[in-house]
Amino acid sequence: MGDSKKEKSEQSRKEKKLKEALKNKTKEAEEYLSQMKYLKADFENYKKRMNREKEEFAKYATEKLVLEILTVVDNLQRAIEAGTDGSGKTSLLEGVEMTYKQLLNILEKEGVKCIKAEGEMFDPHLHECVMTEETDKHEEDTVLHEIQKGYTLNSRVIRHSKVKIAKR
Image 1 (cartoon, rainbow, N blue to C red):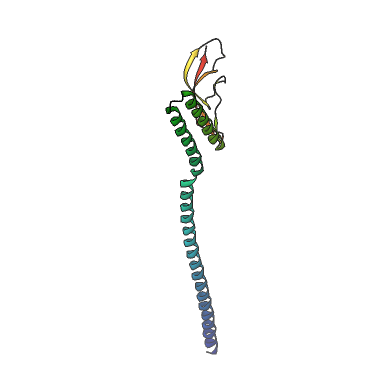
Image 2: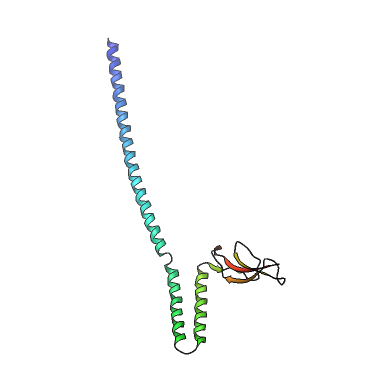
């Protein structure tokens, strides 16, 4: 009988230890869960903030380019006014040529470049053939005439040159 009391006492002590250990682990798990919930909320807020900042950046990313183009618009307006004051068409032409060069410079600063076409061999990655002409004066597939200029933006074609090429 004494052994039975001892066993029950021993078992009771083990149960208390296990209950205490379980209680501690449960408390620890609840703390981890709480931390995870805070981290999840923080991450959701971070994602929302990043999306807002990304949208804001996209909205105003072209502001500098637009401001530079507006100076070109101003110059075009001055050229038109100069052409209508009766002083002659040469001042209008000079003003438009200056404005055209200014606009090309702005675009070049932004990474836009003209695609060289006339006299080059036809390249389907750069050119779009819209016409052909039979001729013996030029090698076949030579670009004879550029109908519309093509452009690259940072080495990526954004508009193909529309060209007329030689055929035999």
